[in-house]
Amino acid sequence: MTSDTRPVPVENSALIGFQKHDHESCVETALATAEERCRAEGLRLTPVRRKVLEMLVQEHRALGAYAILDRLREEGFGSQPPVAYRALDFLVENGFVHKIERLNAFVACAHPGATHSPAFMICRKCDAVVEAQSAPAKGALGAAARAVGFEIERTVVEAEGICPDCTKKA
Amino acid sequence: MTSDTRPVPVENSALIGFQKHDHESCVETALATAEERCRAEGLRLTPVRRKVLEMLVQEHRALGAYAILDRLREEGFGSQPPVAYRALDFLVENGFVHKIERLNAFVACAHPGATHSPAFMICRKCDAVVEAQSAPAKGALGAAARAVGFEIERTVVEAEGICPDCTKKA
DNA sequence: CCGATAATGTTATACAATCACATAGAGGGT
DNA sequence: ACCCTCTATGTGATTGTATAACATTATCGG
Ligand SMILES: [Zn+2]
Ligand SMILES: [Zn+2]
Ligand SMILES: [Zn+2]
Ligand SMILES: [Zn+2]
Image (cartoon, rainbow over all chains, first blue to last red; front, side):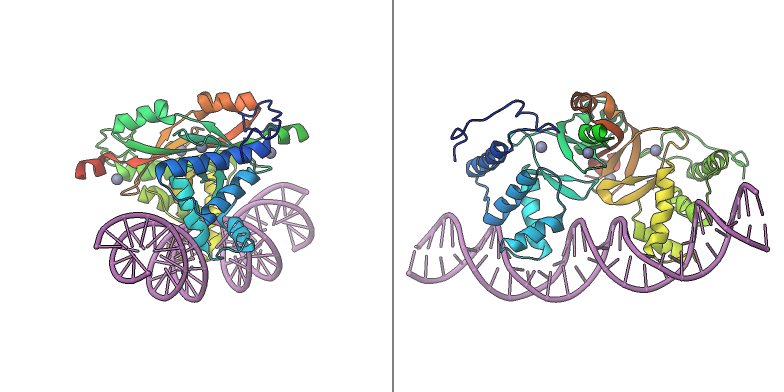
């Protein structure tokens, strides 16, 4: 299960963006990191939760709760919505997964471990989702918030547009 | 129907924020502006659409599609979801109304006329929603997008937190 | 008036999320 | 081992959000 059992043709394995990358190790790393963190912090990465995380990391795009639920059913887990939503709640709360509000869908975190406020680029043609960093509270929005006395706790930043692949095709 | 028929106790009528403001004229101005723009651009502000916009400006907070639909029914319009959603689609497409993705709800634009990319502050206690300006494409997100060749068309920026009123109460 | 287009009305259905309650596991103290 | 407690799952039912599909009506330019 160590990630050095096989040559890793890294090119830009850090950029999980639209570029191709070593997906195999990408998946393993993500799951290993999650297990590591759960062990360290006393969180319980149960079978359902692990399966959901694995699906999302594997797919590498945003999945709706019911798509996830369908797969859980196939894998022999419970088939009612709360099964999926509870697993997702756990994963989102602990930062392993992010919810894409624009799509009402979920995507595996691309920067697991580090606490961060994510931003997303969503292609409106192919629904690809890529995670980037953001710091909206540092810009105009933060200034506006301080001006009126609003205390920001969390931000949703999602950019909709056309991904490089879809641009080329057109 | 002109806005000078009555003394306007303006203090900070520009800031539609959490502060109090001259709501009467606020409503009239918004509707007048909308009618003006529709006339100018050949858009059709039909009765349903106008009613929905009026409700949202009047309420001055985010309303769900079904809350809107209920009111439409009371006013004698169609009572099925598409009636509300189609009116909302029109209003959102033309910038009179914004959708708050985090709440699955809709709010009247606070800066009608000017094309702008809005940002929102959402109080998680009282659900108050205030519109501010944003320029996320100019910051870290814009840089990331250019780096990978993603073409941003639209951004969703929503800050969740506690509004000044709710802070005082606690 | 006629035909094309846009807008509305209505039915049905898909997708998203939560509530309520029963059951099963894990972990700690005895 | 046992019992107790807390957490996690399983399940049925329900509510909320959104769209598909199709018929009807209104509007506008010939
Ligand atoms: Zn992340
Ligand atoms: Zn694309
Ligand atoms: Zn606006
Ligand atoms: Zn508040």
